Amino acid sequence: MLAGIRTRDLRKIYTSPPPSAAGGGFGFGVAPGRGKKQPKPQIVALDGISLEISPGEIFGLLGPNGAGKSTTVGILTTRVRPTDGQAWIGEHDVWAEQVVVKRLIGVVQQRPNLDFSLTAREILLFHGAYFGLNSEERAKRADTLLDRFKLRDRADQMVRGFSGGMMQRLSIARAMMHDPQVLFLDEPSAGLDPQTRLLLWEIIREYNQRGKTILLTTHNMEEADALCQRLAIIDHGRNIALGTPRELKASVPGGYLLRLRFGQHSPELLQRLQTLPGVREVRTNTDRKNDASSDATGDNSADVYADRGGSLVSEIANLASSGSVELCDVHILEPSLENLFLHHTGRSLRE
Image 1 (cartoon, rainbow, N blue to C red):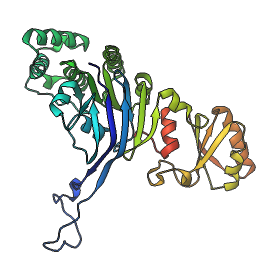
Image 2: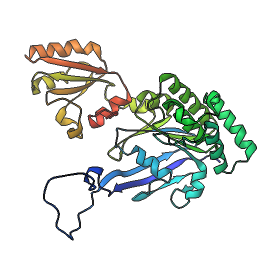
Image 3: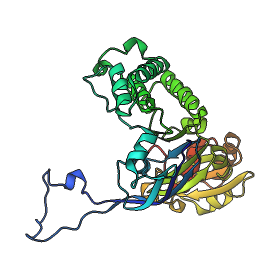
């Protein structure tokens, strides 16, 4: 049975105070009156996420830290209870049919959570037993996965001596041990060397070719572009873009982004920049959404979205010179998913 993923208006509001406010540290100020209840903080992690992921699709969730990616995965894998909304794996409601859902999914978290008192082979065998595989099938699958993930020579060693990359490979092998219909990979290539990352991409494609649905979260634009058939970019718990990598990159005005910084603010210069051939849009720091968290420097910066990159710099410099404005810095970004996110939020996906 092939299984897809579906969410409808998922919301998650956390009410636990941040660690610094939980009473474990020292602070200054007026102590609250006795007997008075302090209002619980409300942190909105998800604000109405709706997704439709087809069976057999590789789907990516992109966004900066704190955007809601891991919370979404947590809800879909039964680890986080939503405040509102619904989620399904195949035809099964995640929270109404947790036992059934857990048999359909494999999960790889951001940080390996392996048992250091076991060998790599034992970890795979115990996982297979947990899902009801007989001893012969467990041994066969464990050997196949150890070979595929290039761990055979360390199969009977304790994992406490493994490198971070080896632990990550073993974590993914463990998630595949019971042959789940849906595989969740939360930042699967974070911290991996290029060679291991390419091996991981190859294995993910192979697994998908068997009809498996894969949802991965990532900060890596190259990874999203190379692997994902479709993806969603989220920020502040909301979906801000959805489509294929090609569609999303094509939706950026002009494609090229030139990030400019001038010595002084000049509205006239910015208006003249808009008239240059190939320039589609000019946005200042105050134009950008979520300006408080923008990575732009000061009010003398501008983003120019255009059909060309380097050839435009001399024309921009000439305009600045004729207006007696110093051009201090130019940073050119080629058409990319990163540009799309910058266009919507003014921030980098890696923040």
